[in-house]
Image (tube, rainbow, N blue to C red; front, side):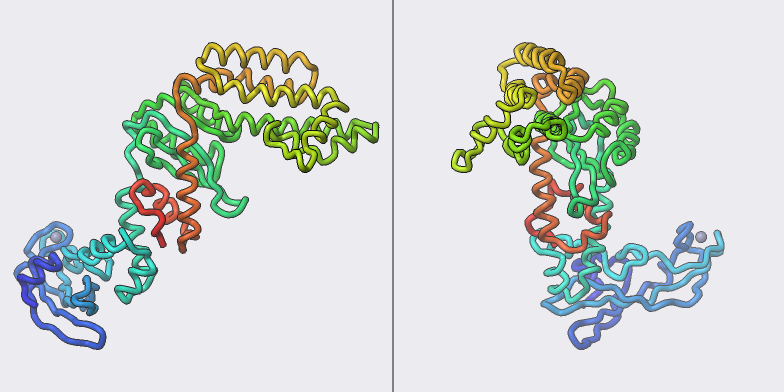
Length: 404
Ligand SMILES: [Zn+2]
């Protein structure tokens, strides 16, 4: 080793190479900071008095499979100008870190194609240390994606733990990058995002969401001028919920034994589209019987089939005519569940038809969601919520299949 090699291999500049020591499993390089190069860490003055030193060890990228440690007596100086008394600044490592910047770069390079676990094993160090290096790197580069040019976004929730914990994800639909990950779901989860959006002065033109009413009101309050695309699958799901409510009420109110039997256990077949019913399990017949015995259910089912057609039209005008017909018809029936749903549709008609204007859907979020699921399955350490968020924010560049 030499002073010049230290520079070329490890980017250690301004230090003198002193000696090499072979130890079990590795090599130690002793380096020294020339006294005349000591400066005050605060004001950079060279007018300092040496006040002892502390031995520090830094992990470096390995050499020919040997672990390399750089050892430096870090001088402590008293500044005559600003009176600071502290260790001098170290140029080749971040404050408080016990590895070189070169080691970080080496680790990050390996992480492109290896899991944290593999890298830790390869470098004979702890998995936690590798993960910290990655986390810091992600934090520096991905924690706050620039929002200034964001125009079209989709908002969705993801389940972090089975059915319990949620996060809210905002996707830039033009770049397919996740631009925000919030804790929980609903309007509170989005508050920090609106704040950052306002600061960035971004002009959001359209938002797609398939989420709860809480999201809808949050979006409408925060972005009153944006086109709000109310996603079709969400609407179908809402309608199915109403259908279930209706069926339950009819069941409660029906005294006729045969009608009750027909309603009982018909939830699933009511929620299917007719073409997906299974004749071998006599589902079409069961559906027909349930509908025949109850005219309210029958008309609701007809409306369900009609509803999906709204998104299958060639143009917005045709779709609008269809939607309004649908709403008026549903309102005229005197069935309270359908009337409530029609009211929702009327309120969101613009948002539903905006599908024909903004041509955005929450579809791409489905892809992100699948990547997150893959990542969760293959990874460890996602109990660290900040790390998990950073991983999601960097999904567009990470090879998610190889995380760990
Ligand atoms: Zn000073």
